Image (tube, rainbow, N blue to C red; front, side, top):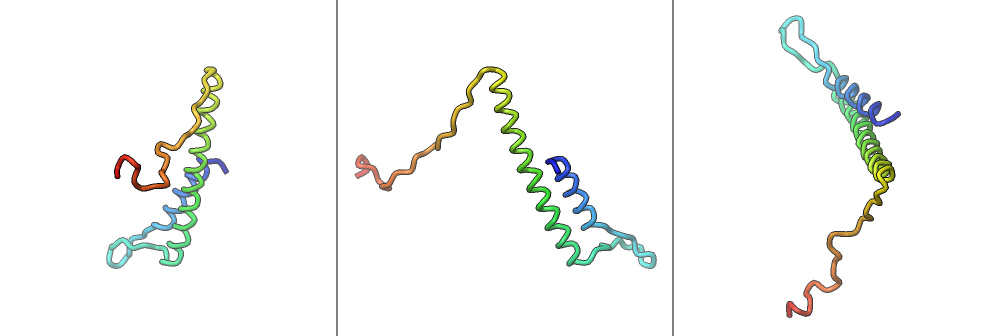
Length: 94
């Protein structure tokens, strides 16, 4: 499965978990799925949605690398924005 397939499956599972019907006597809408089944379907949908996001992130990263390589640009390496100090107070603060 690719990211799009995972996303579609997550949507299908949520649709199943929230399926409703109309009561023929009262005319009120009610959920046609047991709470246990709703929980199971929702958990499965969550897994597929997470996998879809991971695939999209990986695809975006691969795309950026390929684009940079095609344009002859070297992507910058990631460096932490702030390097934590071993001391909470610098010498200047004392």
